[in-house]
Picture 1 (cartoon, helix red, strand yellow):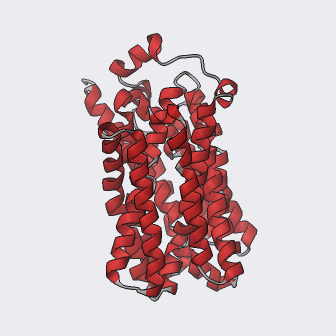
Picture 2: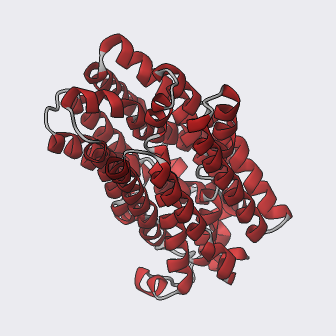
Picture 3: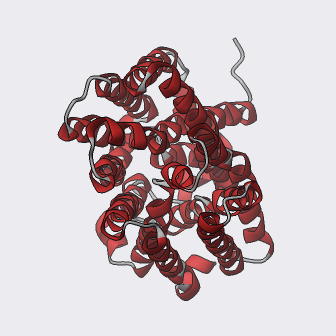
Length: 404
């Protein structure tokens, strides 16, 4: 049988990475829908419930370099299969959880590491073998999977919770993920792992391997600039996004409408990512990053206005602004890291940089819940988010290597 053309295989690989990201990010963000029923069922404070989400984000970030190293040594088949097994088992068991530590173990530890195994670190390494200079565009599509996951999984989660209950919804998700694991194991991984000859040949010869190690990368200022951008931006965005559905319900919107509205952020996320990626090639990195942060800040302002004027128009404006820019910087950061630290250990290095995103998401989501509990309102949460987002864009404004 004739092997598929490299261009066709590249599209298959892109489709797989997109599908896995939809699944991983969709399940992770579905916690925003499960937050209220779990809180009401057990009577836990907002910060206690959000510690589950924070644990998942923290573990996902901390395990990123481990996932990168595992990918470098064992390849995508092992990494992706491990991720699906962890996710499926975690959500299946979460349906029987009775205590906070049990949720933290299942949805936090296991699901967090499972999401990392099918997330941006392994996807970016695999896609880098097929798309080369076009990696930023490919990663923009994969990053947009977060939006697709939110669009599909959040309304589905609310429907399942309304019809069967939150425990049964978790069990359904767990079984579905384990079923997906079977066809994944049968894919032609040997050919898909090899990469495109047009990309890997010059890479192997003399272009990519510049001798970077994790130790030498840590000593470079660009490493910490990328790390801090990931960290502070995630703090700002996740301090809000983890509570979006609860926020909208408190503002007067019905639960299903709130989940569906936030789910539609997935519709605009792809457009936002592709727009920022396109602007990067037209007006440069500095201006495109400034644009994305400005739109994110406008989204935070509109969210605050929703507390006073809970209108569908303002809700749509918030979803368009905040949702379209959620993760829009990710493809540019990924492409920048792959360019600066190219080499055989790029998976380990990029995975370590990605710790910043996990730490930021964990701190942001937990801090947002704690601030809400302490103040009894969302005003301080929004101010905290705004300040963090502004700090997050500073490295791209001040570090030359990140603007080139």
